[in-house]
Amino acid sequence: MDHTLTDFFNSLDTLYAQGKTQEIEPFLRHTLEEHRVCCGGHDQIFTAALNELGTYYRGASRYDEALRAFESAGQDILSYGTKDTMDYATNRLNLAGTLRLMKQYQQALPLYMEAADIYSRISGRRSYHYAAALNNLSLIYLDLRQYRQALDYAQQALQIIGILPGHPEERAISLINSSTASWYLGEAEKAREGAEKALALYESLPEKGVHYAAALNLCGTIDMDQKRYESAWKRFVQAAEYTKGIFGENDEYKQAMANATLAREHLPTPSAPEQDHMYSLPRMETAPASPAAQRGAKTPGSPEEKPGLTLCRAYYEEIGRPMIERDFADVQDRIAVGLVGDGSECYGFDDAISRDHDWGPSFCLWLTNEDYAKFGQALQQAYDALPKTFRGYTRKVAPGGEGRVGVLRISDFYRQFTGLSHAPESIDQWNRLDETYLAKATNGEVFADLLGRFTSIRNALLSYYPEDVRLKKIALRAAVMAQSGQYNYARCLKRKEMVGANCALYEFIRAAMSMAYLLNRRYMPFYKWAHHGLQYLPVLSVLHEKIQHLSTCVDTDTKEALIEDICSDIRQEWRRQHIADGSDNFLITYGPQIISHIQNAQLRSLPIMQAY
Image (cartoon, rainbow, N blue to C red; front, side, top):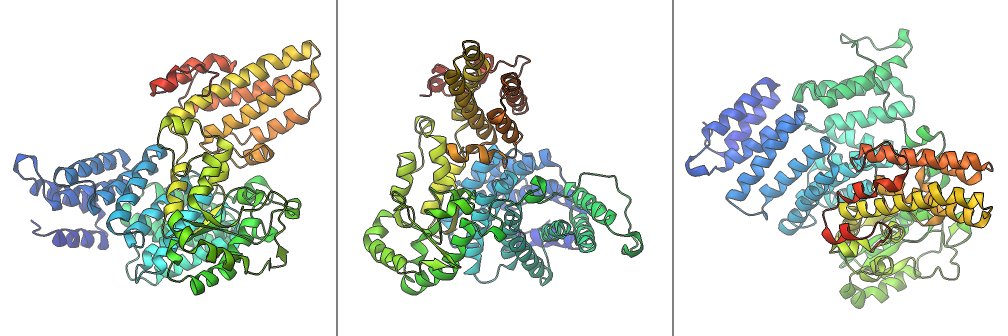
């Protein structure tokens, strides 16, 4: 029997190191039995064994068993302590990680947030544990395909790890996450550099850790995208073998092997590397192509186009940060920096036309009210003294465009978009927030925020509308789509009321676009960019082309058919999300079914066409 917690972990580490994976589950179960004590209480070794059993099950893709183990461990921790402990925060991360792998993202995200909050209060926002929590948040936002947010979290983690001694593996994990986000954002060279740095860090370690395979897979994926097939093949095989040695042939192993097979098929047979293990594998889907390749065009934000966000981040890194570190060294940890708010560059949608006004090298510096009073004016003067031209671009400010960048109060920034100086605190507050203003408040990037005040509000908003509010808005948009497009558009045409018909069509299109964003749990940009943004949504991106056709075709019969086709797409997505189901294509008939899912009595009692 192990007498100390150290003995327990040493024994477990030995089993992993020796590759005796078949002995790990019996060892953990034996430990649990030996450390049960009378009267329903358990000791720390019992709780540690439960957590490790959950980790083992999760690694073996036995997610339901992992979930039960982590839930039991969490209850056990609370039986002899409180929520404000490092053990409980770590348990929340483990539970959230399992839910993430089960694709239960809405359940996982609050647990990740809870863990980060506990770590920040106990060990501070410049600690290894807090950085690890940020990396986990980056992972879930990668899964949710919210790549800008994923990049924000990974870069915050990198910034923290950079000022801490040691922790090379956590730095490598941060690089993996930021590189993955950069790759999906179309920043291929930036992604490759970060991925290679992460892999080099791992290869310098005598004990590489479970995430080494993730670095290999990422480098292999980038190799595939850049047609370096032999390098990709080797890295995928190496990732698969490493994963198998720890967890057996789990889901990650199978995916790595599928990617290896694809890479090998691109190699000419004579030059294919000769190995003892030339696997015969089932054909699976290809390794993911880059977003640019998927669309057959450049991604907004690609480096060669020098879009606003890339330019402004470089302007901060090369011009702004040195100024802050030199002139405001004693308060630099209290200054949040980034580019968020009004402007096409904040969405990554800017092009050559955008550059004629309110575009160019610049960034925001956000301060608390107290800090603004102490040094806000001095910081603004220092910002104003920075070079106006950078890499050949000069910011042109149009009338009305003042105050978008420079030094801003955090409270004022959020109040202009939400009417609140803090995150919404009630269902009613959330329900009254316009999605287009929320899109402005949460777009762009945060370059630095060690204090975390700006980012904490941003993250609360990015967690999206509470489900009751989302459902209420979905029901309302369905009613508007049915009334304007499926009913009144045709009636106006019959009356030859062409202005009325066009107004009905506009209302339908706006409601349909909003519906698509709601079903993606993303905020719709304001009207100029709402349609443009549809093509980048993970779900219902097909509506981008259909709405384009609806807006430009002349034949009214075709327009009516497109309206019904779009409604059918929406209805099928409702079924997939378990919002509503049925065969009737007239969307308003689903209103009662959608509203029945709303738990809040006040919100549920509102008429379907009444927003609040």
